[in-house]
Every structure is written in structure tokens, then in C-alpha cells.
Image 1 (cartoon, rainbow, N blue to C red):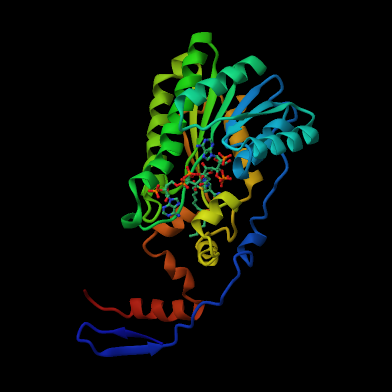
Image 2 (image 1 turned 135 degrees about the vertical axis):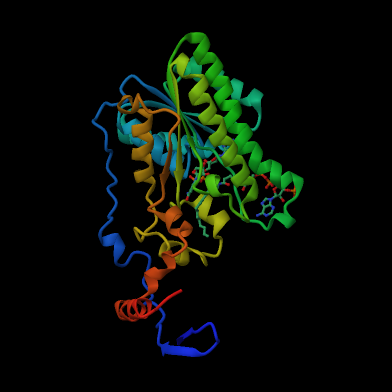
Length: 324
Ligand SMILES: CCCCCCCCC/C=C/C=C/C(=O)SCCNC(=O)CCNC(=O)[C@H](O)C(C)(C)COP(=O)(O)OP(=O)(O)OC[C@H]1O[C@@H](n2cnc3c(N)ncnc32)[C@H](O)[C@@H]1OP(=O)(O)O
Ligand SMILES: NC(=O)C1=CN([C@@H]2O[C@H](COP(=O)(O)OP(=O)(O)OC[C@H]3O[C@@H](n4cnc5c(N)ncnc54)[C@H](OP(=O)(O)O)[C@@H]3O)[C@@H](O)[C@H]2O)C=CC1
């Protein structure tokens, strides 16, 4: 029951504001926004191209490797767990018929990054496409965070991206070879977010790094773009950000398109940004979140819960107001 109060404190009107019907995340809106998951670009868009994807063995990195490989790219995927990488590489290359190499690399270690790039060059040459996707994250009240916890996330996300970008950028410049660099950040790189503070700080740093290099290294034939994904189910993210599954429903409820994103949708956008179709695109930050960011930001967006009858009443009240 909601009451409208006069400034005197007297109740003017009482009416029932029922709780909105509980809608499951995949109910009404997703009927309008069904995902399309096949490769979007023409076949062969990445023929004769080499793509280097950090964290390419799992989750979104795996999905991006899959679509690039489907479109003809040779791929090199790199992260810490060689067995996971090798399994993914085998699965993708047996489906697409294109080479996928797995290289062990901890992006926190600049020497390991240099060794990894040496191996890639020996195998396949310097890449045309670089996707900085590797990340670490976990929810944690900031007062519980240790210096090592801070370091573990910021080293992977910010330093890791910087080490990969510097190592490859310098070698590409030396070889006078152009390339597309893409970084995967997150919508809260822009707003900041409590409880994932090292990730928010590091992702914001990655965005500053990529926007800066878009300006500086265009002259070497290098493009730099950023995708800020909203929630897309992966084991890596959801097990560390919503380990009990408690928050998923309220998260979906605030997404105007009524569902989570799909890895293949993100992969199609990444493929476009990394392709020649986007050769005029650099320094772009693309939010890809089903509308979640603007939905959380708008002061009055909670009014979605007001029913048509309640609107009739509210309108009458507003129109009935005389003076200020
Ligand atoms: C509201 C619902 C949300 C649902 C999802 C919505 C998603 C929308 C937006 C999403 C953004 C997503 C961003 C992402 O980046 S997801 C990517 C997630 N993937 C990964 O994190 C994979 C890699 N991660 C890891 O390997 C680990 O998690 C790691 C901790 C980052 C690094 O591993 P490692 O180097 O092995 O470190 P450890 O030795 O284990 O730990 C280092 C220090 O960190 C402390 N620590 C680890 N976990 C926690 C924790 N949960 N809480 C507090 N502290 C933690 C650990 O204790 C160590 O510190 P020390 O004790 O002082 O030594
Ligand atoms: N899923 C989501 O909802 C969202 C994800 N993102 C971003 O998308 C990207 C992919 O995340 P997602 O696929 O969900 O999660 P995953 O956990 O599956 O991916 C993270 C990858 O990073 C690799 N990695 C972690 N640490 C290192 C390291 N030190 N050196 C090299 N590689 C490392 C991991 O491999 P290994 O363990 O073998 O090292 C893993 O493959 C990340 O940048 C994340 O921040 C952003 C917003 C939303």
C-alpha cells in the first residue's frame, strides 16, 4: 500500500501499488531479443590472418577464437593452463579445419610474454589481430582485500594487457606491420563498482591505455578498440562474481533486453572490430550489455514497475496540482 503525503504530513490518497509480477529473466523481453549465434561476417574474412588471443582457452576467449577460426584465421591462444588451452585448440581446429596453437603464458610476467611471442613468431609469424581478454576477478569487500589480492587482479588485467601490448606493439612497429588490438573490459570500467575494486581500477586503466595508443600508434598501422561486455555466463566469471547464484535474477531483471548475453554474440562483435570491415574504427569503446548500464543509471527507471492503472492515478494527481 502506498500513500501520497502532503507536505503537511496528511495522507491525500491511498492506493495499492502491487509488487510487479515476478518475471523470470527469460520471460517477456527476450522474445524480442533472441540471440543469433552463427558467424556474422562473410566466410574467409580472416583468411591468411593470424590472431593472438589471451585467455583463449575458456569462456569468452574461447568463443572469440572459435569465430575467428571459423572465418579462416589461424589462431594462437595463450594463458597459464596449457592442458586447458590444448583441449580447446584441438576442439576448435578439428571443427574449423584451421590451425589453433596453444602456448603457455602468464601475462603478469613480461619475460614469459616475450618468450610466448618468440614461440608464436617461430610457429606462425607476428599476428594481425591481438585480443587482450585474459583477466582475474573476484567479489570482495575492499576492507578484506590484501595487497596480494589487489596485485593478483591488477597484475593480470592492467599489467598483463600492457606487457602483451608493448611486446607485440614494438615488434610490429619494427616489422612495419599493421594490426588490430582489442581489449575486453567491462561496463563498470566507466562507472567504477564496489566489491570488485581492483578489477574496476585495472579495467579503467586498460581503457586509458587503449584510447591513448589509438591516438599514438595509428601512424604505425595499429588500431585499438575496446568492448565493455555486460553479464555473459561463463564459469570463470560467474563462479567468482556470483558463487551462490543469488544475484543472477535481479541482474537479469534490470537488463532491458531481459536476458544474459551469449559468448557467440560477443565473439561476432569482436570479430567485426578486428576485421577489415572496421578498418576506420579506432579508439572506440563499445558497450555490449543488453542495456544494463543505462538501465542502472537512470534516476526514474524504477518506474517501469508502475502499472497502467497506477499511471492513470499519477497523471490525475499531477494534472490536479495547482501552483508550486
Ligand atoms: C551480481 C552477479 C554477478 C554475476 C556476473 C556478472 C558479470 C558482469 C560483469 C562482469 C565482469 C567480469 C569481469 C571478469 O574479469 S570475469 C573473469 C573471471 N576469471 C578469472 O578470474 C580467472 C582467473 N582468476 C584466478 O586465477 C584467480 O581468481 C585470481 C585470484 C584472480 C588469481 O589467481 P592466483 O594468482 O592463483 O591467486 P591466489 O594465490 O589464489 O590469490 C592471490 C591473492 O588474492 C586473494 N584472493 C583470492 N581470491 C579471493 C577472494 N575471493 N576474496 C578475497 N581475497 C582473495 C588470495 O587470498 C591471495 O592473497 P593473499 O592471501 O594475501 O596471499
Ligand atoms: N563473463 C562476463 O560476464 C564478463 C566478462 N568480462 C571479461 O571478459 C573476459 C573473459 O572473461 P570470461 O571468459 O568470462 O572468464 P574466464 O575466467 O573464462 O577467462 C579468463 C581467462 O584469463 C586467463 N588468465 C587468467 N589469468 C591469467 C594470466 N595470469 N596469464 C594469462 N592468462 C590468464 C584464464 O586462463 P588460465 O586460467 O589458463 O590462465 C582464462 O582463460 C575477461 O577480460 C573479463 O574481464 C567482462 C564483463 C563481463
